[in-house]
Length: 212
Image 1 (cartoon, rainbow, N blue to C red):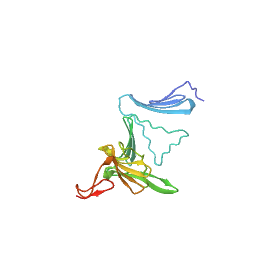
Image 2 (cartoon, rainbow, N blue to C red):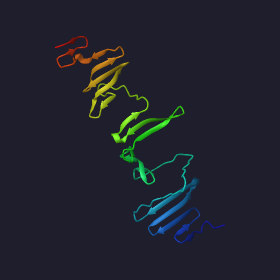
Image 3 (cartoon, one colour):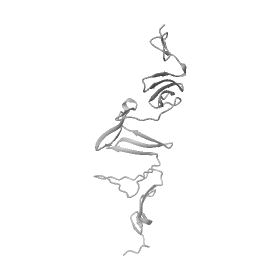
Image 4 (cartoon, helix red, strand yellow):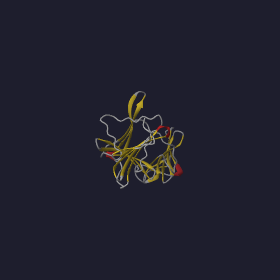
C-alpha cells in the first residue's frame, strides 16, 4: 500500500494517486488523469506554441467502441482521412458550411448502399467531369413554380421546367409559364403566345398552323 498523499517523481515524470504528469522538456507536459465517473483525460501542452500533437500508432487495427456517442472536435476546422500518408478526403467546417473534399485528383465521390441484400452505387459525382452526377435510380424533386422551376440553371434560375398540375409539365422562361404538356398529349401555349414552326414566318397558335 502506498499513501495516496505521497507523490512519486521518476526523472521528469510525477505520479500522483489519480494522474501521471510527464515533462519531456521545460515547455512540454503530457498528463494522463482520472476523474469522477471513470473519466480518463489525456492532455498535451506545449507552452512554446508548437503543436502538442497526440500520435497513436498500431501494427494492426485501432477500434473506437463507445456505449455512447463518439465526438470529433477539431478546432482547426478539418478532419482528414489518409491512406499511407495520402489525403483521401477532408471534412471541413467552412463558416459553418459542411464541406466534403476528395483529396486525389480526378477521383470521384461515391455513395453506396444495400438494396434488399444487394450492393448498389446510389450516386457518383465525377470529379474529372467538374462534378457531373450519375444516379443509379430515379430522382424526385419538388413540383417547383414558374418563378422557381424544379429544373433550372445556375445562371438563370427562373427559366426551366416544373410540374404545374397533375400529369402536367410546364416550361417557364423569365419566371413566366409559356408551354405546358399534358397527359392528354396536348400542347398548351400559355399567355396567348404564338409558336414559330420551321422558320420565323410559320406560326401555330395552338389550334391553327399558318404557313407563310
